[in-house]
Image (cartoon, rainbow, N blue to C red; front, side, top):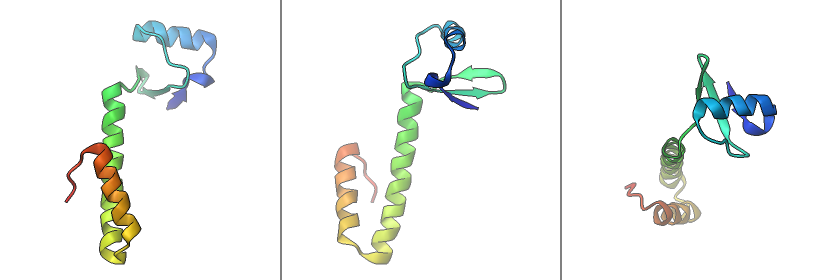
Length: 88
């Protein structure tokens, strides 16, 4: 189950913060798995973002190969500059 901190009651939020040993952010997602609490770390969020970027690059490459679109090529180049990724 995925919860957002904005959906929690003050008592729920306090209990989760006590379990985690830190304060929750105002708009943070919390993943509950098998009755254990897990909050995504910065590294987890960055890893997920990197996976999404890779998937986006894969789709964009297919579009370039099938459509030969200049706009898609431009988007890939801009994304590579932002992420310093080497895709092809």
